[in-house]
Every structure is written in structure tokens, then in C-alpha cells.
Image 1 (spheres, rainbow, N blue to C red):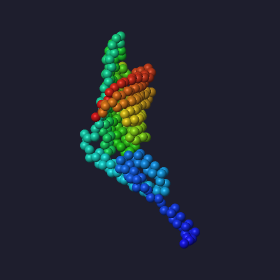
Image 2 (image 1 turned 30 degrees about the vertical axis):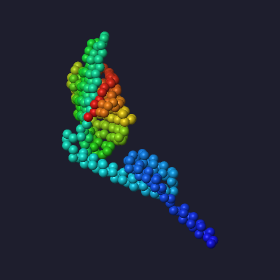
Image 3 (image 1 turned 120 degrees about the vertical axis):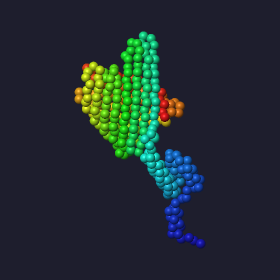
Image 4 (image 1 turned 45 degrees about the horizontal axis):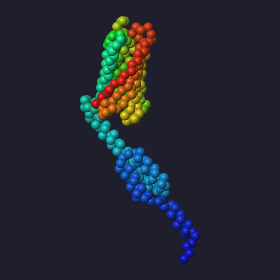
Length: 304
């Protein structure tokens, strides 16, 4: 029997229009990757399946869409659970902290003993974030400039969204080398998170400030200032992190600034080694000109 030519053409067209079925082995490989839960692996397996079986693209698209839908639903559920947990947390819940310690000893013509210690607490709530910090730096000895510097601060933040927030700041400082027994700062303003990822975060803050200084060589004074600050954190690797915090105060005819850069390297569990470089600038307290102090440290940090 002779098959008409138009019938052969119709069969060929129907075969071409019928999508190829994805082999069971390839489908099982994709499902195994999805069950493992690693997003990068899943995307890689799906891309390889699409390259090797282009005529089964429709079926692969359906599998990928179902996975992405389940992933979005799972992430939304985790977000709701986290928000509910934060909303129901008590005042003393969800606090995290760290202790930083370091010491130095020198003997000989210039002998001294130095100590540095700090403690920090952070609480993340649904709308409120609290930061408490305290630092002490003492150095005493022969033929060296004795140093005593103390800083304590509290900064509450009210989060209006994932990026913008309002902040408040109450801070006390004491540094006789810079010419004051006590400097008190009250500030408030707005903050904006430029980066909000798990690996990197960058915050800008700005607002007015009120400062009162109990100076050593001149009368106490109070003044209004403008405050700007930058906070940056970058997790370079799972074991290496870079941090930088800085603040600048503008006052009439005077200004002050500080910047602290630190590199943290994980050692064992919650224990880290830290290399830091602290820069402080003062143009006030009876000084004839601006002064810059720098200090490098190597310390140990314990997180809890």
C-alpha cells in the first residue's frame, strides 16, 4: 500500500510538535537535588538537564516553577514565624553579646602595662533594636603618656521598614589626654541601610546632637552639633569578617571624629581573634589645633 505524501508530512509535523518526555533518570536526579535543598545545586542540575534535553524544556520549566513556588512559600512561612517570635519576645529575650579583651606589657627604658576591654550587647526585636556598648582603655607606666579612656553608649533604633529607621543615642566619654573628664552626647535622627544582606550590611545615620563637656583646663560648655555616622560589616568568608564604624560631629568652629576598623578571624566556636585600628580626631577642649590619635590592637573576642 502506498501512503500519500501529504499523510507522511502530517505525521512528521505531529511528531515535531509533540514535546519529548524527560527521562526518568534525569527527573529523579532533579528531584534528588530539590530534596537536598541547596539552591545553587538545584539550579545547576536544572540547567544541565535543559542543555542535554532541550526538547523536554516544557516539563523542566514546570518542575522548576513548582520548586520555586514551594521555596517562596517556605520562606514566607519562616518569615511569619520569625516575626511572631519577635513580637511575643519579652524584654530580656533575644539579647546577644560579646566581650573583647587585650593587654600589653613593656619593660626597659619605657616600661608600661596596658589593658583594653569592651562589652557589647544587641537585641533585635520586631520594631525595636537596642545596642549597648562599654569600653575601657588604660595604660600606665614609666616614661610613657598615661592613658585612661572610658566610653559607654546606648542606641535604640525604631525600624520603619527593612531599610529606614529612626535612632537615638546617649553616650558618655572620659579622656583626660584629650582634655575632658566627661563628655555627654544626646542625639537622634534617621538611619538608612544601603546594604541589608547576610554577608554585607552598610548603614548611614545622621541627625542633630546636643553635647556637654566637663573640660579640665577650661569652663564646662554645652553646644549643638550635627552628627553623621557610617557602620559597615562584610563577611568575606565564613571565618573572616571586616567591620568599620565611624562618627563625625560638626560644631561651630569645632569638630570631632572617630573611626574604628576591625578584622575578625574565627578561632574555635564563639572565640575570635581581632586586629583593629582606632583613629580619633579632636579640634576642641582648648586645643590650639586639631589632634589625631591612632591606636592598633590585637585582642580576643568571645561571643555569647
